[in-house]
Length: 238
Length: 238
Image 1 (cartoon, each protein chain N blue to C red):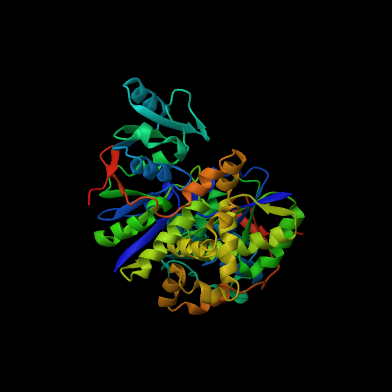
Image 2 (image 1 turned 120 degrees about the horizontal axis):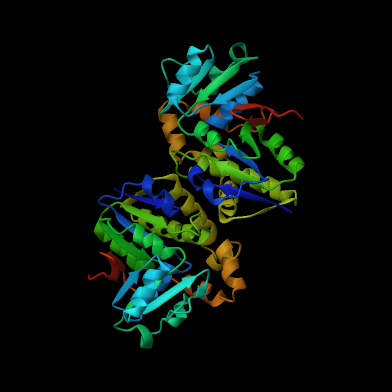
């Protein structure tokens, strides 16, 4: 029996032993949803960078760059942080450099781990099948918001934990996992309605991004598993 | 309208602005439940210490010392970490030095804050009334377990948040608060039964401490509010 552990904020990851485990990065609004979208629309590589200066340096070298802070596209960048910008005409066969407020930092925390994948509702069933096939312990790493707990990542972590445990190949390893499954059970009759009380839902709605919320909460738009290799993400080859 | 914010682990407290707020420390299993018990049974002061050597130094000076690590009373100490040890015959009119695995560290993190109180199910209604009377923003600081999220503190934080918000004098300020209230709603039909899946419940049960669990989950055994003053706790004078 393998374990599934939820880590609710990146700063708590030092409490977890990541060795020989699969770390699944979650940032529903919006980094991991957008990374799934990028590969779905044909991007070949995504390079996550923390620092704006690093993103500018990549831009000067001729890369396409997506860069956002506090919900707004930065001037020098080719893309902001809306999934609707990353259309196949613009990203197919391209490498995209990507920098956001939270999610890309979380990815870069995981650079030296054994196996790191990117997950969102958009590739939910594929991630479930991938994790079952790996037959390893799993850590679901929630990016949260500005270093703190957030509901949308918890809802997702609960949905994924419940699905893994329902196969009888996994069991919940910590209270964070039990918490996330109870929250998922609150949310699952209507995830959008449930999250309408959350901080990020209200923040994005006020910025006119209700359509992005709806987009990020769709199940199974792609079968692709983005996987971290050195300093970039690529499609997992089955 | 005042705010109530839940902080699910001490290491996330740096994300909160504590100025002019009341910080309510929660460690249901067992530090804050035991501190309530100590004052209920007549102790006049409780000195929380992090370090075992500091506890030993107090012992040498003639203080009564309660000291536990990983569930076991330390040899030099007068008390371990069971609420049933702190009977009036032993603690009335006494100062008790207290050191535990998690809870006392959390208290000492808060030494320079404006107003810090200790809460558990045992003084629930009194804390509610105290916080309403203070008319200040509130942070519920969960001690968690070994630095990470735990369900029992979250259940309590949810119960307290819900009660404060029901007065219409408070509103929830962050996703952690919303999470805790949803968990409380799962738990409230039978808190002991709900927590039977949690890590600490199982740990304490295996150590034969089921009676301690039941004790710590009782509402309103005392009206006392322990409050932090300099380096010790005393009864709040109404």
